[in-house]
Length: 140
Image (cartoon, rainbow, N blue to C red; front, side, top):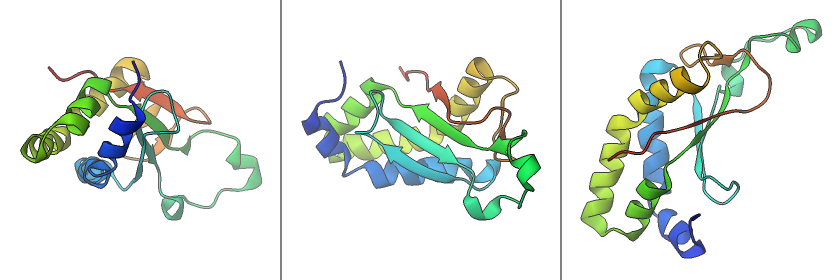
């Protein structure tokens, strides 16, 4: 079952913290733009892109050849988002902190499992054009 409108509304309060924790976790892997998408997809998640300013100019001939700038959608487990949406303030703070502490290892694991050799997170590039998607494993 997807998130309800009420759960999405409650998640808006913690959305900046989730985005900040993900961006902080990614600092060691290079510079990335991170946005949180709750309503736009069937699966809520984070979009991680290579910053436009960091991309080197490419000739028209090279634009259609790999590597492509990173455009990664990371699906977030609904049970974790529901816990954040429905928990009290202390539970939310613990949940956001835990998310930040586990995000990068879980992301690296998801990339290695689902799209091996297609994404170089540190360089901010991918081997295929368009949006690539991975799903974070549920935390128990």
